[in-house]
Every structure is written in C-alpha cells, then in structure tokens.
Length: 96
Image 1 (cartoon, rainbow, N blue to C red):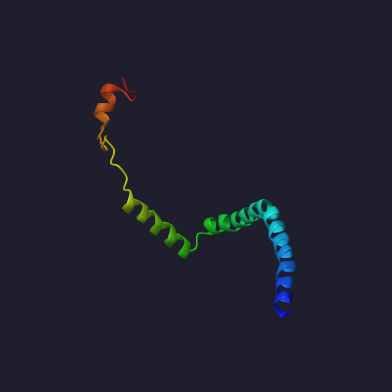
Image 2: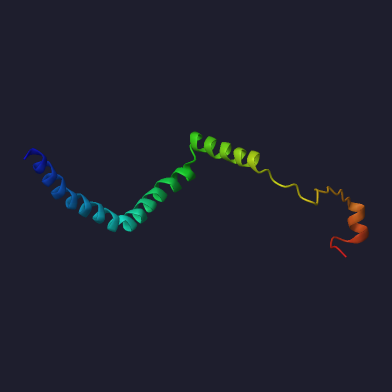
C-alpha cells in the first residue's frame, strides 16, 4: 500500500507542476519584454555614468576585439600638406 500511495501523490502532483510550467511559459514573452526593458533601464544610465569598472571592461573588450580581428589598414595613407600664404595668394583659396 505504501508504494501505491507514493504513486498517487506523484501522479496527482504531476498535473499541478505541468500547469504551473505552462502558465510560466505562457507569460514568458511578456516577462522577456519586461526583463529587457528593466535591463535597458539599468544599463543605459550605467553606460552614461561610465564608472571606472565599466570603462575598464569596455576598453579591454575593444582591445580583445582588435586582437582577434584587427582593423584593415586603409589603401590611402594620410597626406600632410603645407600650404603657405604665397600659394594661397597665387592659386586662390578654392580648388580648381
């Protein structure tokens, strides 16, 4: 009789557990949206405030990204041009 009492308890408890799981799953999309909004409401001010640990994490993650996949160097390097007043007077200030 003891084994049948346990099986009855297990069988009767199973539908209750299944119902509670189904209710949680039915509320899941709304709770995910709420969780996302709460997370954003926390993270945006944290990023604006940018305390030292957050800044350190941000900079280290950027360094890691650059280490994993570095930037490709550009085909056109920077050119420094020295334009003096004589050239400006000779050619004018606009490009031709």
